[in-house]
Image (cartoon, rainbow, N blue to C red; front, side):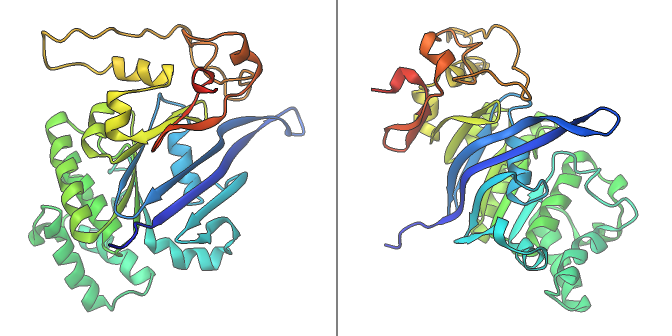
Length: 325
């Protein structure tokens, strides 16, 4: 049996945005949106990044694809460090890595028909002739649940769910290896969300895709993911397989997030963990553990020393002093 390979390895990734001020617009500080995180994504798996708004999960996805140039770290895609690749060479690799955005309307050119939207990446990367691109567009539009007759329509003629199907078709038409989905279903109605999620699962199996799924909806993440990374203030708090994370969350932050998931069983009693205070300013993060100001389990060491990211059990990593020997 062939060993499963890592499609992507992120090592000590940082993305700090400079804060400019004064008449001369000098740098006065940095917003540490992503602050030294590491993880790997295996072939054909769905790896999810979760956390509150502003935790850095979307910035992580954009930094991987160099839409935000990383400040430090390594991003290894099939063994090649993307941050060492020149812009011209990176453009050639870019077809293997696609991003699907949260808002399908703003990410689709309103002046182009669906046919042109789907043909454009094929022609840009010189993957097909015009005639071949037309045929591939017709095939792909049917794979995402739309019809060939809709190829001559414009984005404004579709519903939100249909526009997201077009975005998915455009991303997959170049046959990528890695797809990053940034809150790809959060703008849709719940009933439409389930349809799109089932479509993503079906397409993943058909095209042997690897997903990075970025979301704040823990119910959706549980349905779709193989492994989950929990981020807070630009740092990774916990990383585990989906079953282990949801059945036995170790970090107090993860426990608080999971306690907030509503239950469909009215008889089920869950103890809600209410976090006090707000997320700290990422331009002035606290010393020690980034979560220590809101953590119900915090003690003196948490304020002084940053916890190490340790493997508490197989495939279950956590950054918390509670689990350090």
